[in-house]
Length: 142
Image (cartoon, rainbow, N blue to C red; front, top):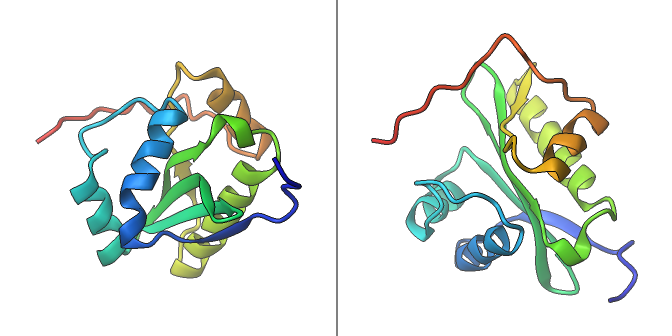
């Protein structure tokens, strides 16, 4: 593996959707109903989601999705390939999506984090996010 000081963060391209889905599998993200090529391709192509990837030597090694609904920003699917973790890629992805969400008008950002992933639950406080114990998330797949 080469020096990771040279990674790039950029918008995901529609033709990279399958690569991102594979990254999520390799990063052991828990699959959800929206983890499919059609839904991710729509998010990449139609926006207003900020679907970003981190790239090292032409290989996608990280991803993040940031959305703004006019009320607050939301972060989903922060994932870094296991071989590239603990090198600043996740922090850089978060910082970039935060900048983009702020430009869109977000004043508060919520990160949805899988509670059974210790690396994830320890990462978010380290970058300034606190657990909001007042809220429980209720979901229904339709």
